[in-house]
Amino acid sequence: MERIASVCVGYAINHTGAFPMKQSALLLLAAPLALAACSDPSPEPGASATPSLAPTVSESEAMVPPVSPAASAPAADGVFPVAMRGKWGVNAADCNPARGDDKGAITVGERSVKFYESVGEIASVKDVDRNTLRAVFDYEGEGMKWQRDASYKLEDGGKTLVLTEFGDDAPQGPRRHSRCK
Image 1: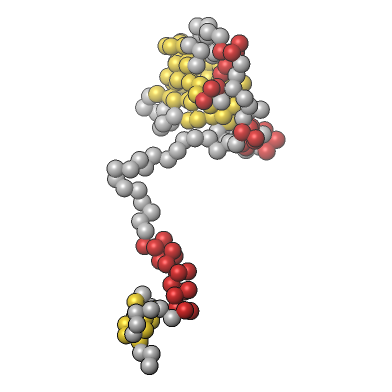
Image 2: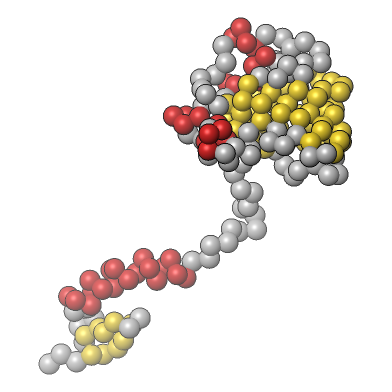
């Protein structure tokens, strides 16, 4: 005589303590879903809740190899280091101007940096070496002019350009750009 002794999470257990075959298969399938539904997706207060700022560009889509040693010669005062010059994007779409959605692209020249709707010219250099330029820039765009202190730094062997702007009205945190092909 099989008699149901108790019910556990909606599944019957017979008097021997064993699950009937069909019900044990259901339990195995439902257990991961039940655990996922009960888990807390928010991070622990001590855990790092800062999102990654790493670019989403894959090497095959928009990155080029690191710059050659000749390109990493010492920087002249008042100009961007040679290794920084060129087009950079926050994502793969930024490296394809034909798409029309390259709003995160920047183009670094000798003495200026061009954004989607503005251009910044080096006004005064605070620090410069092969991999870093910190300067005050005179910006102009959308009918406005302003100045901002900014730092450009090469990372990942020249594959990543990190832009950090300083000041009360500056964008928060660093922005990472990958070199476009």
